[in-house]
Image (cartoon, rainbow, N blue to C red; front, side, top):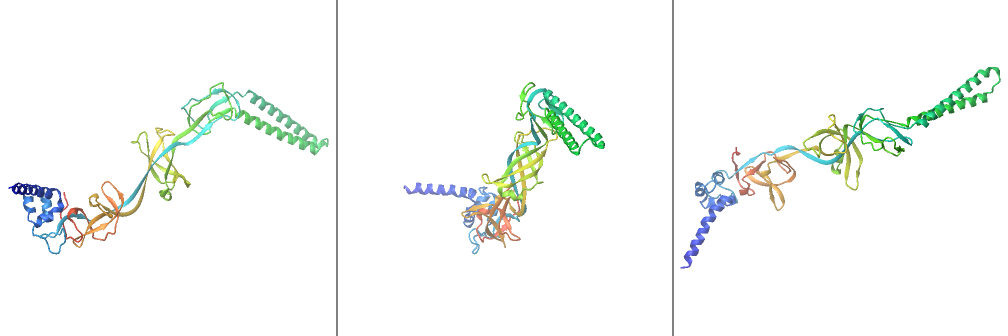
Length: 386
């Protein structure tokens, strides 16, 4: 009597397991079809109609092998010819910027500041006077040099007038000429010393912070301010050594500030280092970007993106990629039969996977229905899903 409940329990488990396997394990469809149970389950709505159509009635074929179905041309799958796309390699880097021109300014002599003619942040043109030192002693030295030159010139003129009377010698005239040249050099040196008491802008640009104030004693080592021309910026960054041979001046780059990612600027490479750094295995590169609206600042961090186009390779749907013990592979349709082909994935995009595989003309890559496929199984094409 105890056997009856056990038989009833086993029958109940089988009755529940078969519909669940038919709905969620497509690999059982060939067995269910051969047992004559797939069609009733499809009619009851347990198995989707498309799955039932993939294994038409008619019983197993004698030569189709595992998974080959009869009565309608084999296992139905959705397949298409592979596309061909260009392989693209995108390289991203982080770089820092500086002005196209920048210079730290200091006086050429020691002195006390008497005037500052600019304010921090103002724009100046090349040649504008920025600051002045007390130059009273330099002006006196210049006036003394002028007097010495005038005296040397008069002496030479007087000796030249007396040369015709025979009262002067050629040696005297040579000494007078030497004295005049020496006086002229002294005058030039005095003028240069006076000019060093005035600080002028060597380039056009924006003035940085000014630390010294009027009355401070400064030396040639004291930095007064910094002028930076930021009409265009130079972005300094590094790229991996694997693309060193593909980097060249003039190549375009996309640059966006890290602080404002939505602001993208197109620039171009202007300089490439002549060697790879041994420690980091990277190559130093510089790119130039325009800053006509003055919205960017030197010293900002930038994200640099470069795209390199490679060879044209086969591209398949991500649904076609399968994995096995030996790695990735795809299912092909060749001469109406399924064939398994190992592949090497080169690049993954949003809508396609670029692969390296021994494809032949006319090959169709299976994207749906791969669960029931076996090598050599006969297949038939189902219409693509709309």
